[in-house]
Image 1: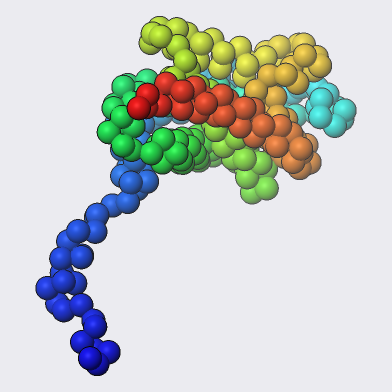
Image 2: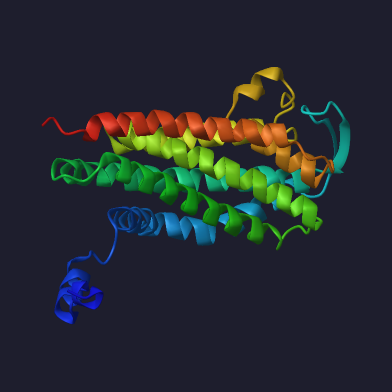
Length: 272
């Protein structure tokens, strides 16, 4: 028999193509995870309308008064525009609430469906990987939008703006992971919303020395937004790249994500 006789005919090739799934399990899981996180209309409205309004209100309240403060990460005393510092803090505050709220709501609503998927044979690792990537995509998109809107109120130099974007992205990842953790941990919506709102407000507000005279106290190093705030302020106002503090923010995100995914794995595992 010749070699060409061993090749599948057109009918067999067509059958194999038809049997091949149009989407891999991971691609399908990612598509549904992104859809669940982006279909929340309230979060979308908050993102589009709340961010610029929040920037405007904070700038109107603070103005452009001069401020001298010690940047904790370097020990240097910086003389800056208090309005610019408040804008950085306001952006962090807005995106932490929006990302945390959107991820929490999506994960909580999809948990029962995820459990049924696992019972039907879907791999937990596939669902976990899809959730991690979807949270990262949503967090990066919200951080980019928040940093772009900032340019309507303040034009830092390109390096400074990239530092703000980096701080925003890591902070969004942290609160996205926090929303994931709460989505699989708490029993009711009220508890999750309260923890995200109060946690985000307290965390980001206390980092601004204009609103909090004690913003240089060592205890603030243990807050999730400390690293991103120091990186953003150091890069935009102090012309210093504080990569270690950006890594500190990523460590918070990793801890929240790991805890949330371990609980997700436990709550969706099949008993068979």
